[in-house]
Length: 353
Image (cartoon, rainbow, N blue to C red):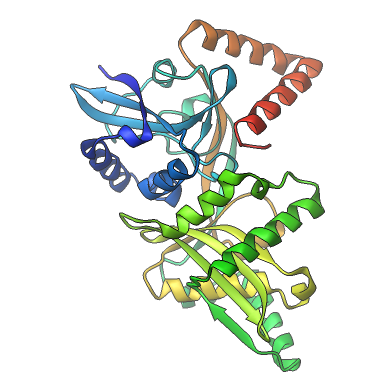
């Protein structure tokens, strides 16, 4: 029988970490960098509050779920709003009851970006989605000119942008791995400006968010790395991107561009150059993340199914939360109130909606 306990991230043992890495290696659904130990290490150094539900069977670890504790027994995935993937990291043969697992330290968990292959959480899903992917497993040229199919629309955008640069006599400079601290600062400043323009909360106003970016740039752990890239036009920074890589997967994560140079499609130019360069280094997949924005559909040639939903602990407060959420779903007014409450709790926990 599997029992769960609650431990701080820093208290995971070498045996726990070895088991975690082995579970990832055995499950293709966990190939995202957001399941790599290096991601959680950086998040914990930035925030210091990362906890882990750890499943044990016969004293041996069989499953893990890392989270930030929130008010009222709620849990938020590691990295909060920055987490594009989350779920259980478990042994392929592990039989885990999520409601009993949560009872070790949580009353409720909302999951929104979980691979559909997650055997622990998928039974609690109430919605589905997908992550958009650039499949580079056949190499970059096979992506750009696939046999028997039309090239992705991203290549048309790339060629138009290149022709415009050439016609204007502009000089293009790309650094796929750019170590400069000023480029990271520029990325955060550009993202803050974007959030302000669009009326969204500025996540880089939080001190821990900026610490997370710095920690990621210093993390080289068991095949995990952050890749900062830049594109300059005539010496002026036009676009930049911070991605997360683990093995053959790069998660296209935090792109930003200078609106004054948007006519040259600098974001698209940089994305293509990142894919071209890293595919030559063994990259097989560039995960663009979930979402229905047009550019993701222009670049993607594959998708990965996701699920979202809620799970409640097998505890009195967990059952109370489940009942309250069930009532809220049946009443528009209560649903709005419950939604506002959840958003406020998310902000408190560093995960703005």
